[in-house]
Length: 217
View 1: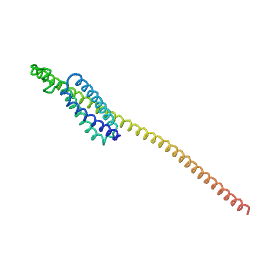
View 2: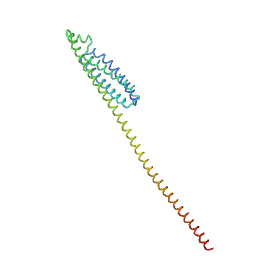
View 3: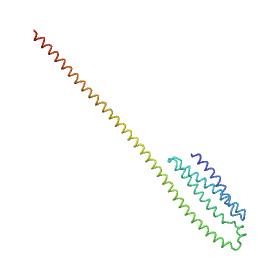
View 4: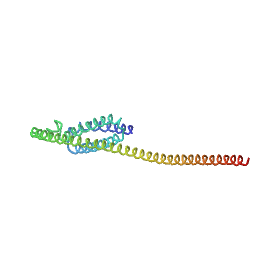
């Protein structure tokens, strides 16, 4: 499981390095060349998002005792992704001094103000997005805890049911043993009574025989 996570980490490092390099080139370009590079970076960022989703799924499958370390690494990758997206958005509306002067001329100062305003709005959206993502992460973690609690309760319930079944079996065995012992005790008492009756009968027979023998003489 962790080997898959590490493979995703390597892919993440490779792609983000390429994206960082390309983002630095975007402000120096213009026209079709810039558009193509922006589309290429956007595609690679989508690949990075998919890698983060895969890493998130892998972390959920890792045992709880080892999950904290991978969660920490995943969190740092998400922060790095946020920074890349922020840099990418800035690079799309940024130009190098040469390109800006060529395209805007005397309107450069006004364009800078619009750019600053746009960046400010972008940062606000990113902050809202981060808050939503944090809320989603809390909800996911709460759901995981709830699932673990339900799983533990289900396991405890099965243990209690098995204990009850063993108790019923024990009660049944005790009932059978009690009936067997009662039957044995009854037979012992019957045998003793029979022996007593036979002994009394024999004793009376002997006494009668002696009495009759004495009487004849």
